Image (cartoon, rainbow, N blue to C red; front, side, top):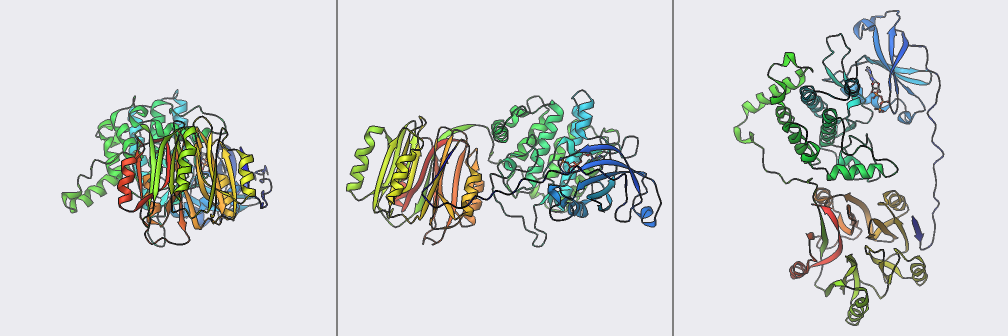
Length: 605
Ligand SMILES: Nc1ncnc2c1ncn2[C@@H]1O[C@H](COP(=O)(O)OP(=O)(O)OP(=O)(O)O)[C@@H](O)[C@H]1O
């Protein structure tokens, strides 16, 4: 991986080594926040943050105990005070339990407090997790059992969502049954609220804003939603997608993306999820599971899931008598009842919201031209496509003679596309076609002469076309070539005042050019396996416009920026076409829309 800079370094500060989670011994006895004294017994489980033990009450009894939990056995969740989750005081999870504890499907927390080096939460003791049940039953689970889990889990998520939270880590290990031998043994609970976030702002009641940070991943790779892999802000749809994967896992014993290893695992898993159609994923599962997957993977960021409808999908599997079901479905019954009630009072008009929706994930990749057009004052623009290496000079020379400079370049099947126009503001331009991606020495030489990279493209055969210009507004420039989309580097450069000003791909490699003085006040990246129209529309609404595009065989990246100086006409349009959009371009010109960026790559559409 190469990274080069046109000069002027900024210090790369590395934070000191992470604090290793301390191995301080647990206390033998615990009493926190006015709780009775508990003796610590066997371990129940260990997660990423905490450790959970059985606590046995050994008295003395206090009044508060009688009010809260009279239980002899409780679950004690310990988190060391130096652990990651406790940087700012008590674990974040405590807050979430304050809001959700004891509501449908969430265990009750009776006491919490610090003892010595540990934060301790005293909660209802529960039984085995769904993973345990599956594991102890020869890696199988009956269809009826999984359907009941589906029904009840959807109702638990509905309740959690109705309180403004998304769970953020839905998986078999986080669903627990009640303690065996008690009344709760068939009851389902969802634990581990450490990754929960709000989808609805508490103060305003509005849905949180959409964002994408491709370097941020929270959750569990196997069950995470594709959106979570891509670093999008969590919303209700993500819990449901993870639930769908959880159900299919319990039913089939395996998910198609298991088994990837190594540094690139998250990317490969995400790609496989994206490419697996609901039919393929559910080929051995009864129909309702496939329908559920189809609904949830097509949910929009802020769309309200139709929980009652999803629950009713499983009606046919579970049988009419709730009393003899392997899992208690009381919560779901209540939900259906409420919705039925509400419906009864409404007109029939919303009865069928089954509008044929455009499916966003079909697992059908297509190689396409993606072209972006901006409104501009009338100007001369010219395009050339299917240009072989040897013919490049003649087109460029002719353009220069006519007062045009290259504004963008792209490549398809080792042939070049070239956009030249009179609107670049450049005063001089040089270019080089090289067999390298990218040719460092030549670029450095031009930097010395105050040329800056203004456009780049890479071909599948690894060659590149780099265009460098004078008269740009750039003050300093830096580029990086990388085997995967280098979001971390971009992020670091953003903090140093650089913005992405050009991008290209060659095969699966990326080259990103970032500049100081780019004239932007903000910038974001939309990265996806398909044309990310939802994200782009949200960004457009917030004043961002696409300023760079590039795509590999399986991913498309769009850089969107807010210009410091607003253009008079902010119109921007995009097109995806299988052939170079020659006739479309002319139609756009007639409307004073000019190509601002173009790339060719495979995206799922
Ligand atoms: N109330 C409980 N009763 C019984 N067992 C529990 C209880 N809470 C947690 N456990 C067990 O402890 C394990 C870890 O708990 P939890 O998921 O809350 O911890 P975590 O450290 O936040 O885990 P993660 O790695 O999933 O973030 C659970 O998978 C479960 O087996």
